[in-house]
Length: 256
Image 1: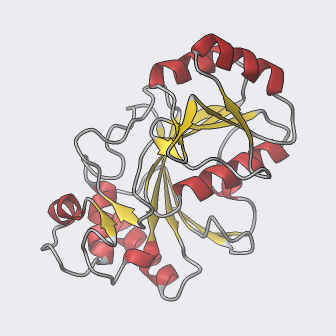
Image 2: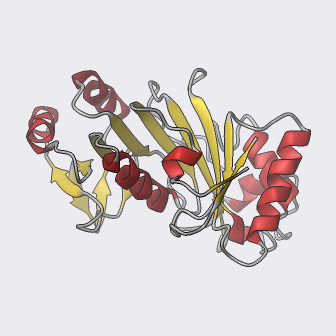
């Protein structure tokens, strides 16, 4: 099914929740696009990370930094207003924001200040695909939704550390030899494997898959092949989309 609407509509996001974003190939872009769309509904939205991310551009979110929990909560209460999301972090280190702990994110959820909290819960060194290491991802246990992002531009390219984060682990989970070409079948295996894309997702969380970069050559066909393999294996998550988080005009495909 093709959906001309927003990314949030394609993912069927309700009026409130805690969304953890994992994977590679557009997590930050997806987070700020969703934040803008949800804020456009009149909702109060916070973006943050449990890892490290670059600070937002001024049009993406208002940055709030504080060195302790109480001060950060106080700033959040003062800053919430419809129209622009906020981005929360402890400090800036080496040009990146230092993320919040899952425990503090749970406290922030309990405070009821925001309708949606969007958490980038994984790192991928700006690569289009990854497989998680033993310590990854860092998903808050009370996440209501987990969004796994995968960049379709990696399919057909080499499986190495210049193109796939943790390529040896990806090869192991995806059934490929190191140095082989990334295939749609290997991406499907990573999506379905218990130690793959949704590793660490809370049992009751809604699982969402976004195959990104579908506006690039051959990417849409590759995305359809990945989701077809998942469907045939009865391994589709609750919602799966083929789209382009960075392109507002691209019409997202939603499966099933």
